[in-house]
Image (cartoon, rainbow, N blue to C red; front, top):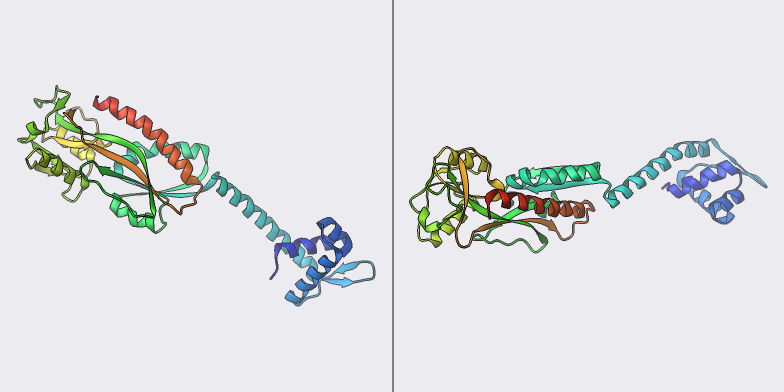
Length: 308
C-alpha cells in the first residue's frame, strides 16, 4: 500500500538524486530512506531507482509515482484543511428538527446569524411534532431537536438525550374583538364554561392540555372547530367563531382578535432543545448559543405583545 510518506520520500529522492541528501532534507537517516524505497518497490513490483556508487537514477516508474503522487498529496492537504475548518465549526453540516411555531418565530433569526458568522455551514431543517422527529434524533439523523411540553402534560425523554431549556411561554386566551371579555386583561377559567372553543386535533398535546386545564375547573370545553395550524385558529377566533387558548409563539395577529391571560396561575408551555449525549458535531455549541440569545429576545417580545 502506497502511503503519503512513501510519495514524499520518493519525490525528495527524485529531486536530489541521492538517498543521503533526501534523508538529510526529510530528517531521516539514509538507511531509513533506502528501506522505505525498497519496501515500496517490493509492494509495487517495480524498480524505482537504479543504484549507482554515489547517486541514484529515477526510473520512469519513479517519475510516474511523483507526477501522480503530487496530485494525491495536494488532495490530502486540501482534505486536511477542510477537516480543520469542520472541527473549528467554520464549515460543516447540521441537521435540525423543530415544531412549526418555533420554526417561524425562533429559527429564522438563529439560522440567519449562523449563516453570517459561518457562511460555509449547511443546515438541514426537518419540521414535525416532537414524537414524530424523536426517532430521527435517536438514530443520529438529527443533531438537535426543538420540542415543547405543557405544564399540565409533563413528559420525559430517553436516557441518552440531553434536554436544555430554551424559553417558557404563557398560554394566551384569544377572543373575538366584540367579545364581552375583549376589554379585560384577565379572565377566570370557570367563567369560560359556556364558550365555544377552537382547538387542535384531539391527539395534539395542546388540545389534551386544554381538556386537562378545563377539567381542573370542573367542565369539558365545547370544541366546535379544530386545527393544528395556529394561524387558522387565530383567524377563526378573529372572525367571531369561538375562543382559543394558544401558546404565545402561536398567537398570530388578526384585526378581529384580542388577547388576555387566565387569572391566577397562567398555564405555560416550555420550549427545550434535545441532543444526544454522544453528539460531537462542533456546530451544536454555536446553534445552542444562538437559540438562547434569540429566545431571550422573542420571550421579551411576546411578553410585551400579550401583556403582563
